[in-house]
Image (cartoon, rainbow, N blue to C red):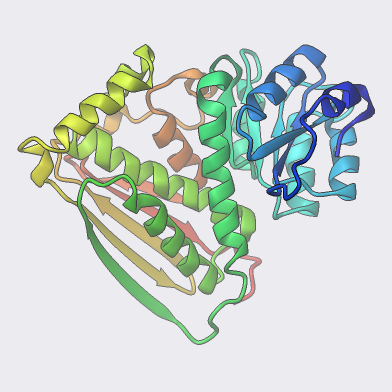
Length: 321
């Protein structure tokens, strides 16, 4: 799936092998040929992905109708149909296709509206090389797990789950997938909502692990990921950090899903949580996870200490039980 304006990019890709592994198509939508090719090049550094291209939202919808991609990666400020309009059209017409925003200075207001109306995540353009592939993986895993659990159990009226996790990052995707399953079984949200809830849950659990129990500041990532993860790995083996646990309580009913996540770190001042309605917060490295959580969940609150977060997903009023 490629647009005519970028056919040279597609034709220059490597020839298929005898038994090729199916690649995930990432549809890159940007009216700037330079930015389009730059984003596509970053996408294809991962051999699991192939890039397709569109120069605006209208062209993107035509390509999606021909062959839905695994994910859409879109700019926001474009002629004919901008990124916000594209997000709304995809959510209405192709709810199984997640959308990631590429944000740039001057597009923050539109980006915030797009997140509120159905986009799955965002990456500032200036951090594409660093963050894009990790964001793609996060969104695609959330989407895949949602699609695999379309058949719901009809009789369950209410359930409550409790977990106690040690400081092992690899446990988080499995837990998020199970919690997404329960949201699906209780029919609390559509596919786009499951993806967004999954991302919010992962962000909350990652915050509890790194910023809560291990007390590693996101400011370290200003120097690159290596110092951040090196310190985290050291503290996983050192007291008092290694003895701390993450406590998760998840309650599901036909009306709502409630998630309570508590770490054993010193906490923080909840008053410092970034305002999710302030577009200026989109470009900041610190607070990105909390911004996504507050945007994607229907209600978010913290305890006074700041080491426990409660998040609620409510069934839409027009949803059928």
